[in-house]
Image (cartoon, rainbow, N blue to C red):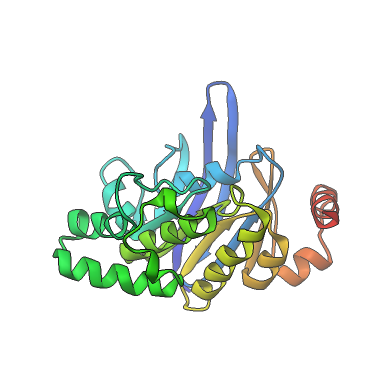
Length: 243
């Protein structure tokens, strides 16, 4: 199987703090990988390195076979969509304008083509009726669904989710997770950083547990939840599954 993402011995520092310690991770095309772990374990830093929001200092990252460096970063970013904790929508633009901006500017689509695509993806995330509203007129769950649709409008090969429900009220979490589950069913390559273990069990092909900047454990969901190998992972799951 060909790899969508290959991280090989990737290390990253913030000043004296080593956020990633020789992290190696392979994500195959069409695979759904869920990364979990305690706060500060390096989960978000790892996926932010994949589209160069953070620059790794050691090791190599390949995306769709292309080595990630200063020369290839724009090329790689065209293949990789990212959905953040905070929705990162432009507050002064309507939902529709938020969605069409990238395809028009980066992909060269006409306004009509971009709007047709945007409406199709708003349908996909179940909020086409919100197209003419401003982000502040929407709930948090709706804003996150707009952010997902915006990523999809760029037709990425890979989608990265950085704790996509952590800024949401509890009753809005499932509406966003349902959209991500439906996306997973389309065969999109996805890497999701999340604490939502029920969702992870449903969606993941592979579970990855990180702690203190390292990948401690990686396994299929049944094995990961049923027979975690390391004490660190057992402790984490016990803690998080009690909530």
